[in-house]
Amino acid sequence: MAQDENVDSFERRRRQRFVAKRRGEYCFWAILDGARVPLVDLSLEGFSIPASSPLASDRNHDFVLQRADVPDEIRGRAKVVNYIGAPGGGQAGCVFDSLEGDGKARLEEWLTAHVLANASVPINEKEAGHIVSGPSLV
Image (cartoon, rainbow, N blue to C red; front, side, top):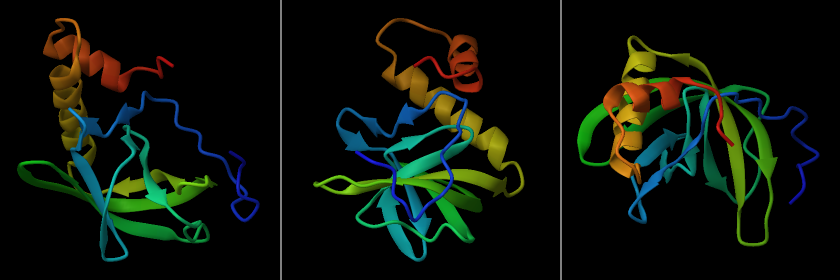
């Protein structure tokens, strides 16, 4: 997979990314430009979404993040920083420009709960929080 020539910056997330599925089902979505799309992954720094073609990288995009079975939402603005094309469909990476209100704290709570729900070994909430806020483990 090659970097798209139309998008000249690369994603630079330093935090751990979390696959946005649980038990094979999507559990996080973004509403971008009026369309609800499942997230591929999510971190404290940004997210990626399936995209058949590059999204506009010359502007910030308003978004609403949602999670499964919870009426909570996080609003903010993000910039598209990369696009990877693939025969079966591509992927666009976005970094947060801003999160409204207490969005950062709520996102950290969402991801901590996600880590706890998906852990294959017993961990506590404090350990899950360290995974979420710490550097990428990959």
